[in-house]
Length: 501
Picture (cartoon, rainbow, N blue to C red):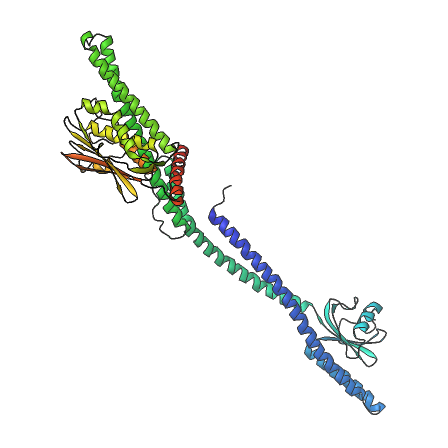
Protein backbone atom coordinates (compact mmCIF):
# COMPACT_ATOMS: atom_id res chain seq x y z
CA UNK A 1 0.00 0.00 0.00
CA UNK A 2 1.40 3.35 -1.04
CA UNK A 3 1.95 5.75 1.83
CA UNK A 4 1.67 9.45 1.05
CA UNK A 5 4.33 11.96 2.04
CA UNK A 6 1.87 13.64 4.42
CA UNK A 7 1.23 10.39 6.31
CA UNK A 8 4.94 9.50 6.34
CA UNK A 9 5.90 12.96 7.52
CA UNK A 10 3.25 12.97 10.26
CA UNK A 11 4.21 9.45 11.36
CA UNK A 12 7.86 10.44 11.60
CA UNK A 13 7.14 13.65 13.52
CA UNK A 14 4.68 11.87 15.84
CA UNK A 15 7.16 9.08 16.53
CA UNK A 16 9.94 11.54 17.32
CA UNK A 17 7.59 13.63 19.46
CA UNK A 18 6.33 10.60 21.40
CA UNK A 19 9.86 9.34 21.90
CA UNK A 20 10.89 12.78 23.18
CA UNK A 21 7.87 12.96 25.48
CA UNK A 22 8.59 9.44 26.79
CA UNK A 23 12.25 10.21 27.49
CA UNK A 24 11.30 13.48 29.14
CA UNK A 25 8.61 11.78 31.22
CA UNK A 26 10.92 9.00 32.41
CA UNK A 27 13.68 11.46 33.29
CA UNK A 28 11.20 13.67 35.15
CA UNK A 29 9.80 10.66 36.98
CA UNK A 30 13.30 9.66 38.11
CA UNK A 31 14.05 13.22 39.22
CA UNK A 32 10.73 13.51 41.05
CA UNK A 33 11.25 10.16 42.78
CA UNK A 34 14.67 11.27 43.96
CA UNK A 35 13.35 14.68 45.00
CA UNK A 36 10.33 13.15 46.79
CA UNK A 37 12.57 10.71 48.70
CA UNK A 38 15.00 13.44 49.70
CA UNK A 39 12.19 15.70 50.88
CA UNK A 40 10.62 12.87 52.91
CA UNK A 41 13.95 11.96 54.49
CA UNK A 42 14.59 15.62 55.23
CA UNK A 43 11.20 15.99 56.96
CA UNK A 44 11.69 12.76 58.84
CA UNK A 45 15.17 13.88 59.94
CA UNK A 46 13.69 17.10 61.30
CA UNK A 47 10.98 15.22 63.18
CA UNK A 48 13.57 12.71 64.35
CA UNK A 49 15.82 15.43 65.72
CA UNK A 50 12.89 17.07 67.50
CA UNK A 51 11.75 13.75 68.98
CA UNK A 52 15.29 12.92 70.17
CA UNK A 53 15.65 16.34 71.79
CA UNK A 54 12.31 16.06 73.61
CA UNK A 55 13.09 12.55 74.75
CA UNK A 56 16.54 13.50 76.01
CA UNK A 57 15.16 16.49 77.87
CA UNK A 58 12.57 14.36 79.59
CA UNK A 59 15.17 11.70 80.52
CA UNK A 60 17.26 14.28 82.38
CA UNK A 61 14.64 14.61 85.21
CA UNK A 62 16.22 14.81 88.70
CA UNK A 63 14.12 12.30 90.72
CA UNK A 64 12.14 9.19 89.95
CA UNK A 65 8.80 10.83 90.53
CA UNK A 66 9.59 13.69 88.19
CA UNK A 67 11.12 11.26 85.74
CA UNK A 68 7.92 9.21 85.55
CA UNK A 69 5.84 12.30 85.01
CA UNK A 70 8.25 13.64 82.39
CA UNK A 71 8.26 10.35 80.43
CA UNK A 72 4.47 10.38 80.35
CA UNK A 73 4.55 14.02 79.26
CA UNK A 74 7.13 13.23 76.55
CA UNK A 75 4.98 10.39 75.29
CA UNK A 76 1.93 12.61 74.98
CA UNK A 77 4.02 15.35 73.37
CA UNK A 78 5.33 12.91 70.75
CA UNK A 79 1.85 11.57 70.07
CA UNK A 80 0.48 15.08 69.47
CA UNK A 81 3.50 15.99 67.30
CA UNK A 82 3.18 12.88 65.14
CA UNK A 83 -0.56 13.24 64.73
CA UNK A 84 -0.11 16.80 63.53
CA UNK A 85 2.77 15.93 61.16
CA UNK A 86 1.06 12.99 59.48
CA UNK A 87 4.18 10.82 59.92
CA UNK A 88 4.36 7.41 61.58
CA UNK A 89 6.72 6.38 64.40
CA UNK A 90 7.98 3.21 66.10
CA UNK A 91 10.12 2.81 69.17
CA UNK A 92 11.81 -0.54 69.83
CA UNK A 93 14.31 -1.81 72.29
CA UNK A 94 17.64 -3.23 71.23
CA UNK A 95 16.10 -6.65 70.73
CA UNK A 96 13.48 -5.32 68.27
CA UNK A 97 10.50 -5.41 70.63
CA UNK A 98 8.06 -2.60 69.88
CA UNK A 99 7.75 -0.27 72.83
CA UNK A 100 5.70 2.46 71.17
CA UNK A 101 3.85 2.55 67.83
CA UNK A 102 2.35 5.72 66.38
CA UNK A 103 0.66 3.70 63.64
CA UNK A 104 -2.77 2.07 64.11
CA UNK A 105 -1.85 -0.93 61.93
CA UNK A 106 1.15 -1.89 64.07
CA UNK A 107 0.54 -3.99 67.14
CA UNK A 108 2.83 -3.42 70.18
CA UNK A 109 3.38 -7.17 70.54
CA UNK A 110 5.11 -7.41 67.13
CA UNK A 111 8.88 -7.72 66.89
CA UNK A 112 11.29 -6.31 64.33
CA UNK A 113 13.13 -9.12 62.52
CA UNK A 114 16.76 -9.76 63.38
CA UNK A 115 17.88 -9.28 59.77
CA UNK A 116 16.18 -5.91 59.49
CA UNK A 117 17.44 -4.90 62.93
CA UNK A 118 20.96 -5.91 61.96
CA UNK A 119 20.87 -3.68 58.82
CA UNK A 120 19.49 -0.74 60.82
CA UNK A 121 22.07 -1.17 63.58
CA UNK A 122 24.85 -1.28 60.99
CA UNK A 123 23.86 2.12 59.55
CA UNK A 124 23.32 3.81 62.95
CA UNK A 125 26.36 2.43 64.71
CA UNK A 126 27.73 5.94 64.86
CA UNK A 127 25.95 7.95 67.61
CA UNK A 128 25.16 10.62 65.04
CA UNK A 129 24.30 8.08 62.36
CA UNK A 130 20.92 7.79 60.64
CA UNK A 131 19.35 5.00 58.65
CA UNK A 132 17.47 5.93 55.44
CA UNK A 133 15.77 3.38 53.27
CA UNK A 134 12.76 2.47 51.19
CA UNK A 135 11.61 -0.69 52.97
CA UNK A 136 8.77 -2.44 54.79
CA UNK A 137 11.07 -3.31 57.74
CA UNK A 138 11.09 -7.01 56.99
CA UNK A 139 7.30 -7.27 56.56
CA UNK A 140 6.48 -5.33 59.70
CA UNK A 141 4.95 -2.47 57.71
CA UNK A 142 1.96 -3.12 55.42
CA UNK A 143 3.69 -1.37 52.50
CA UNK A 144 7.06 0.00 51.57
CA UNK A 145 7.82 3.32 53.18
CA UNK A 146 10.48 5.98 53.36
CA UNK A 147 12.09 5.02 56.70
CA UNK A 148 14.46 7.05 58.89
CA UNK A 149 15.94 5.42 62.03
CA UNK A 150 18.23 6.58 64.84
CA UNK A 151 19.37 5.33 68.25
CA UNK A 152 18.02 7.12 71.33
CA UNK A 153 19.69 5.97 74.54
CA UNK A 154 19.04 2.21 74.73
CA UNK A 155 16.21 2.14 72.16
CA UNK A 156 15.69 2.68 68.43
CA UNK A 157 13.40 5.34 66.97
CA UNK A 158 11.83 4.78 63.53
CA UNK A 159 10.06 7.53 61.54
CA UNK A 160 8.45 6.57 58.22
CA UNK A 161 6.14 7.80 55.46
CA UNK A 162 4.14 5.34 53.30
CA UNK A 163 5.19 5.36 49.66
CA UNK A 164 1.55 5.50 48.47
CA UNK A 165 1.76 9.28 48.83
CA UNK A 166 4.32 9.25 46.04
CA UNK A 167 2.00 7.04 44.00
CA UNK A 168 -0.75 9.62 44.38
CA UNK A 169 1.70 12.29 43.28
CA UNK A 170 2.77 10.19 40.26
CA UNK A 171 -0.86 9.59 39.30
CA UNK A 172 -1.55 13.31 39.27
CA UNK A 173 1.66 13.98 37.36
CA UNK A 174 0.82 11.27 34.82
CA UNK A 175 -2.64 12.75 34.26
CA UNK A 176 -1.15 16.19 33.64
CA UNK A 177 1.58 14.63 31.51
CA UNK A 178 -0.97 12.73 29.40
CA UNK A 179 -3.03 15.86 28.89
CA UNK A 180 0.05 17.87 27.88
CA UNK A 181 1.22 15.11 25.51
CA UNK A 182 -2.22 14.96 23.87
CA UNK A 183 -2.26 18.71 23.34
CA UNK A 184 1.27 18.60 21.93
CA UNK A 185 0.34 15.78 19.53
CA UNK A 186 -2.77 17.66 18.42
CA UNK A 187 -0.73 20.81 17.74
CA UNK A 188 1.95 18.72 16.00
CA UNK A 189 -0.69 17.06 13.82
CA UNK A 190 -2.15 20.39 12.75
CA UNK A 191 1.27 21.91 12.06
CA UNK A 192 2.68 18.87 10.25
CA UNK A 193 -0.43 18.45 8.10
CA UNK A 194 -0.27 22.12 7.16
CA UNK A 195 3.45 21.93 6.42
CA UNK A 196 3.18 18.66 4.52
CA UNK A 197 0.33 20.06 2.41
CA UNK A 198 2.49 23.05 1.56
CA UNK A 199 5.26 20.66 0.54
CA UNK A 200 3.20 18.06 -1.27
CA UNK A 201 0.88 20.42 -3.19
CA UNK A 202 3.65 21.59 -5.57
CA UNK A 203 5.02 18.04 -5.77
CA UNK A 204 1.55 16.82 -6.73
CA UNK A 205 1.42 19.53 -9.39
CA UNK A 206 4.81 18.45 -10.74
CA UNK A 207 3.67 14.80 -10.71
CA UNK A 208 0.51 15.62 -12.67
CA UNK A 209 2.46 17.62 -15.24
CA UNK A 210 5.10 14.87 -15.52
CA UNK A 211 2.36 12.30 -16.09
CA UNK A 212 0.87 14.39 -18.91
CA UNK A 213 4.33 15.03 -20.32
CA UNK A 214 5.08 11.31 -20.26
CA UNK A 215 1.77 10.75 -22.08
CA UNK A 216 3.05 12.76 -25.03
CA UNK A 217 1.86 16.30 -24.29
CA UNK A 218 5.12 18.22 -24.72
CA UNK A 219 3.51 21.62 -24.14
CA UNK A 220 2.59 21.20 -20.45
CA UNK A 221 4.59 23.12 -17.85
CA UNK A 222 4.56 23.38 -14.06
CA UNK A 223 2.74 26.56 -13.03
CA UNK A 224 2.19 28.24 -9.69
CA UNK A 225 5.36 26.88 -8.06
CA UNK A 226 7.51 29.96 -7.58
CA UNK A 227 9.18 29.27 -4.23
CA UNK A 228 12.94 29.60 -3.84
CA UNK A 229 13.38 26.29 -2.01
CA UNK A 230 14.32 22.87 -3.41
CA UNK A 231 10.77 22.21 -4.66
CA UNK A 232 10.75 25.49 -6.58
CA UNK A 233 14.13 24.61 -8.07
CA UNK A 234 12.78 21.18 -9.04
CA UNK A 235 9.82 22.81 -10.82
CA UNK A 236 12.15 25.23 -12.65
CA UNK A 237 14.47 22.38 -13.67
CA UNK A 238 11.51 20.32 -14.86
CA UNK A 239 10.23 23.19 -17.01
CA UNK A 240 13.72 23.68 -18.47
CA UNK A 241 13.99 19.97 -19.21
CA UNK A 242 10.51 19.94 -20.76
CA UNK A 243 11.35 22.93 -22.97
CA UNK A 244 14.58 21.29 -24.13
CA UNK A 245 12.86 17.98 -24.85
CA UNK A 246 10.09 19.76 -26.71
CA UNK A 247 12.67 21.60 -28.80
CA UNK A 248 14.52 18.35 -29.48
CA UNK A 249 11.30 16.60 -30.42
CA UNK A 250 10.35 19.45 -32.71
CA UNK A 251 13.84 19.41 -34.22
CA UNK A 252 13.67 15.64 -34.70
CA UNK A 253 10.28 15.89 -36.37
CA UNK A 254 11.53 18.69 -38.61
CA UNK A 255 14.68 16.72 -39.37
CA UNK A 256 12.63 13.65 -40.29
CA UNK A 257 10.34 15.73 -42.50
CA UNK A 258 13.27 17.38 -44.23
CA UNK A 259 14.96 14.05 -44.80
CA UNK A 260 11.74 12.69 -46.32
CA UNK A 261 11.46 15.71 -48.63
CA UNK A 262 15.11 15.65 -49.62
CA UNK A 263 15.06 11.94 -50.42
CA UNK A 264 11.66 11.88 -52.06
CA UNK A 265 12.34 14.63 -54.61
CA UNK A 266 15.35 13.08 -56.40
CA UNK A 267 13.95 9.57 -56.07
CA UNK A 268 10.66 10.68 -57.63
CA UNK A 269 12.60 12.33 -60.45
CA UNK A 270 14.76 9.25 -61.02
CA UNK A 271 11.76 6.92 -60.98
CA UNK A 272 9.76 9.15 -63.31
CA UNK A 273 12.49 9.40 -65.94
CA UNK A 274 13.38 5.68 -65.82
CA UNK A 275 9.69 4.68 -66.07
CA UNK A 276 9.38 7.06 -69.03
CA UNK A 277 12.26 5.33 -70.77
CA UNK A 278 10.87 1.87 -70.03
CA UNK A 279 7.35 2.56 -71.23
CA UNK A 280 8.51 4.53 -74.30
CA UNK A 281 7.19 7.90 -73.15
CA UNK A 282 10.70 9.31 -73.56
CA UNK A 283 11.96 8.67 -77.09
CA UNK A 284 15.41 7.06 -77.57
CA UNK A 285 16.97 10.24 -78.90
CA UNK A 286 16.21 12.06 -75.58
CA UNK A 287 17.20 9.25 -73.25
CA UNK A 288 20.82 10.37 -72.91
CA UNK A 289 19.65 13.80 -71.81
CA UNK A 290 17.38 12.39 -69.14
CA UNK A 291 19.97 9.84 -68.08
CA UNK A 292 22.27 12.79 -67.41
CA UNK A 293 19.59 14.28 -65.14
CA UNK A 294 19.16 10.93 -63.42
CA UNK A 295 22.92 10.77 -62.85
CA UNK A 296 22.84 14.27 -61.32
CA UNK A 297 20.00 13.29 -59.02
CA UNK A 298 21.85 10.14 -57.95
CA UNK A 299 24.84 12.33 -57.17
CA UNK A 300 22.56 14.62 -55.21
CA UNK A 301 21.33 11.62 -53.21
CA UNK A 302 24.89 10.47 -52.59
CA UNK A 303 25.91 13.93 -51.35
CA UNK A 304 22.85 14.09 -49.09
CA UNK A 305 23.62 10.69 -47.56
CA UNK A 306 27.28 11.64 -47.10
CA UNK A 307 26.31 14.92 -45.42
CA UNK A 308 23.96 13.09 -43.09
CA UNK A 309 26.74 10.65 -42.21
CA UNK A 310 29.07 13.57 -41.52
CA UNK A 311 26.52 15.22 -39.22
CA UNK A 312 26.00 11.93 -37.38
CA UNK A 313 29.75 11.57 -36.82
CA UNK A 314 30.06 15.15 -35.66
CA UNK A 315 27.18 14.92 -33.19
CA UNK A 316 28.38 11.56 -31.85
CA UNK A 317 31.88 12.90 -31.24
CA UNK A 318 33.47 10.41 -33.66
CA UNK A 319 35.42 13.18 -35.38
CA UNK A 320 38.85 13.38 -33.81
CA UNK A 321 40.61 16.72 -34.14
CA UNK A 322 44.28 16.31 -35.14
CA UNK A 323 45.32 19.92 -35.08
CA UNK A 324 48.74 21.20 -36.09
CA UNK A 325 50.35 24.39 -37.38
CA UNK A 326 50.20 24.56 -41.17
CA UNK A 327 49.73 27.00 -44.07
CA UNK A 328 46.00 27.46 -44.69
CA UNK A 329 46.77 28.55 -48.27
CA UNK A 330 47.31 24.86 -49.08
CA UNK A 331 43.73 24.10 -48.02
CA UNK A 332 42.21 26.95 -50.05
CA UNK A 333 44.26 26.02 -53.11
CA UNK A 334 43.27 22.35 -52.78
CA UNK A 335 39.55 23.23 -52.52
CA UNK A 336 39.86 25.50 -55.59
CA UNK A 337 41.60 22.76 -57.60
CA UNK A 338 38.86 20.28 -56.65
CA UNK A 339 36.21 22.68 -57.99
CA UNK A 340 38.23 23.88 -60.98
CA UNK A 341 36.06 22.16 -63.58
CA UNK A 342 32.84 23.62 -62.16
CA UNK A 343 34.39 27.09 -61.94
CA UNK A 344 35.49 26.87 -65.55
CA UNK A 345 32.12 25.54 -66.75
CA UNK A 346 30.31 28.31 -64.89
CA UNK A 347 32.58 30.99 -66.43
CA UNK A 348 33.39 32.27 -62.94
CA UNK A 349 36.40 34.44 -62.14
CA UNK A 350 38.37 33.14 -59.12
CA UNK A 351 40.46 35.77 -57.34
CA UNK A 352 42.71 35.93 -54.32
CA UNK A 353 44.71 32.72 -54.58
CA UNK A 354 47.74 34.36 -56.10
CA UNK A 355 47.70 37.03 -53.41
CA UNK A 356 47.75 34.61 -50.49
CA UNK A 357 51.08 34.24 -48.77
CA UNK A 358 52.05 31.91 -45.97
CA UNK A 359 49.30 32.14 -43.35
CA UNK A 360 49.71 29.71 -40.49
CA UNK A 361 46.77 28.34 -38.53
CA UNK A 362 46.50 25.77 -35.76
CA UNK A 363 43.81 23.38 -36.97
CA UNK A 364 43.08 19.99 -38.51
CA UNK A 365 43.79 20.27 -42.26
CA UNK A 366 41.17 17.65 -43.18
CA UNK A 367 38.37 19.41 -41.27
CA UNK A 368 39.27 22.85 -42.64
CA UNK A 369 39.47 21.43 -46.20
CA UNK A 370 35.86 20.27 -45.85
CA UNK A 371 34.81 23.73 -44.57
CA UNK A 372 36.61 25.50 -47.42
CA UNK A 373 35.21 23.09 -50.02
CA UNK A 374 31.61 23.47 -48.72
CA UNK A 375 31.84 27.27 -48.70
CA UNK A 376 33.40 27.33 -52.18
CA UNK A 377 30.80 24.86 -53.45
CA UNK A 378 28.04 27.06 -52.02
CA UNK A 379 29.55 30.14 -53.69
CA UNK A 380 29.77 28.38 -57.08
CA UNK A 381 26.08 27.41 -56.89
CA UNK A 382 24.93 31.00 -56.42
CA UNK A 383 27.45 32.89 -58.57
CA UNK A 384 26.09 33.81 -62.03
CA UNK A 385 28.06 33.51 -65.27
CA UNK A 386 30.97 35.97 -65.49
CA UNK A 387 30.59 36.48 -61.76
CA UNK A 388 33.45 36.57 -59.25
CA UNK A 389 34.54 34.48 -56.29
CA UNK A 390 37.26 35.94 -54.06
CA UNK A 391 39.24 33.98 -51.46
CA UNK A 392 41.05 35.74 -48.63
CA UNK A 393 43.03 34.83 -45.50
CA UNK A 394 44.65 37.33 -43.15
CA UNK A 395 45.89 37.29 -39.60
CA UNK A 396 44.05 39.44 -37.06
CA UNK A 397 45.85 39.21 -33.74
CA UNK A 398 45.67 35.69 -32.30
CA UNK A 399 43.30 34.53 -35.07
CA UNK A 400 43.28 34.13 -38.82
CA UNK A 401 40.16 35.22 -40.68
CA UNK A 402 39.35 33.24 -43.83
CA UNK A 403 36.57 34.37 -46.17
CA UNK A 404 34.82 33.33 -49.37
CA UNK A 405 33.17 36.24 -51.22
CA UNK A 406 30.98 35.89 -54.29
CA UNK A 407 28.96 38.22 -56.44
CA UNK A 408 25.35 37.43 -57.20
CA UNK A 409 21.92 37.62 -55.68
CA UNK A 410 23.14 37.34 -52.08
CA UNK A 411 20.99 36.46 -49.07
CA UNK A 412 18.02 38.41 -47.75
CA UNK A 413 18.35 40.09 -44.36
CA UNK A 414 15.52 37.95 -42.95
CA UNK A 415 17.30 34.73 -43.92
CA UNK A 416 20.76 35.59 -42.55
CA UNK A 417 20.13 34.30 -38.96
CA UNK A 418 19.05 30.87 -40.25
CA UNK A 419 21.56 29.95 -42.97
CA UNK A 420 23.58 27.67 -40.68
CA UNK A 421 20.57 25.63 -39.52
CA UNK A 422 20.09 22.11 -40.81
CA UNK A 423 18.09 21.84 -44.04
CA UNK A 424 17.48 25.58 -44.18
CA UNK A 425 17.04 27.00 -47.69
CA UNK A 426 16.09 30.53 -48.55
CA UNK A 427 14.20 29.03 -51.47
CA UNK A 428 11.93 26.64 -49.60
CA UNK A 429 11.05 24.66 -52.71
CA UNK A 430 12.69 21.28 -52.99
CA UNK A 431 12.08 20.72 -56.62
CA UNK A 432 14.38 19.62 -59.36
CA UNK A 433 16.12 22.99 -59.56
CA UNK A 434 16.60 23.50 -55.83
CA UNK A 435 20.28 23.96 -55.09
CA UNK A 436 21.77 21.86 -52.32
CA UNK A 437 20.33 19.98 -49.36
CA UNK A 438 20.79 22.67 -46.73
CA UNK A 439 23.30 20.61 -44.75
CA UNK A 440 26.64 21.94 -46.01
CA UNK A 441 26.63 25.21 -44.08
CA UNK A 442 25.48 23.47 -40.91
CA UNK A 443 28.44 21.09 -41.22
CA UNK A 444 30.74 24.08 -41.69
CA UNK A 445 29.50 25.66 -38.48
CA UNK A 446 30.01 22.46 -36.46
CA UNK A 447 33.52 21.91 -37.89
CA UNK A 448 34.61 25.51 -37.25
CA UNK A 449 33.30 25.40 -33.67
CA UNK A 450 35.09 22.10 -33.18
CA UNK A 451 38.30 23.78 -34.37
CA UNK A 452 37.97 26.57 -31.81
CA UNK A 453 36.77 29.27 -34.23
CA UNK A 454 33.55 30.98 -35.23
CA UNK A 455 31.72 31.46 -38.52
CA UNK A 456 29.33 34.09 -39.81
CA UNK A 457 27.82 35.46 -43.02
CA UNK A 458 27.44 38.95 -44.48
CA UNK A 459 25.42 39.88 -47.53
CA UNK A 460 23.99 42.71 -49.57
CA UNK A 461 20.99 41.35 -51.37
CA UNK A 462 21.24 41.65 -55.13
CA UNK A 463 25.00 42.30 -55.09
CA UNK A 464 27.21 40.00 -53.02
CA UNK A 465 27.56 37.49 -50.18
CA UNK A 466 30.54 36.78 -47.91
CA UNK A 467 31.10 33.80 -45.61
CA UNK A 468 33.94 34.15 -43.10
CA UNK A 469 35.34 32.06 -40.28
CA UNK A 470 38.24 32.28 -37.86
CA UNK A 471 40.88 29.81 -36.72
CA UNK A 472 43.59 30.01 -34.03
CA UNK A 473 46.86 31.38 -35.42
CA UNK A 474 49.06 29.94 -32.69
CA UNK A 475 49.50 26.79 -30.69
CA UNK A 476 47.01 27.15 -27.81
CA UNK A 477 48.11 26.83 -24.19
CA UNK A 478 47.19 23.86 -22.00
CA UNK A 479 43.94 25.45 -20.85
CA UNK A 480 42.75 25.95 -24.42
CA UNK A 481 43.70 22.38 -25.31
CA UNK A 482 41.58 21.12 -22.42
CA UNK A 483 38.71 23.30 -23.63
CA UNK A 484 39.03 21.86 -27.13
CA UNK A 485 39.03 18.34 -25.69
CA UNK A 486 35.97 19.21 -23.59
CA UNK A 487 34.10 20.34 -26.70
CA UNK A 488 34.68 16.91 -28.24
CA UNK A 489 33.52 15.18 -25.05
CA UNK A 490 30.41 17.40 -24.90
CA UNK A 491 29.53 16.36 -28.43
CA UNK A 492 29.79 12.70 -27.41
CA UNK A 493 27.68 13.26 -24.29
CA UNK A 494 25.00 15.08 -26.26
CA UNK A 495 24.77 12.21 -28.73
CA UNK A 496 24.47 9.65 -25.93
CA UNK A 497 21.70 11.69 -24.29
CA UNK A 498 19.83 11.85 -27.57
CA UNK A 499 20.11 8.08 -27.95
CA UNK A 500 18.72 7.52 -24.46
CA UNK A 501 15.82 9.86 -25.15
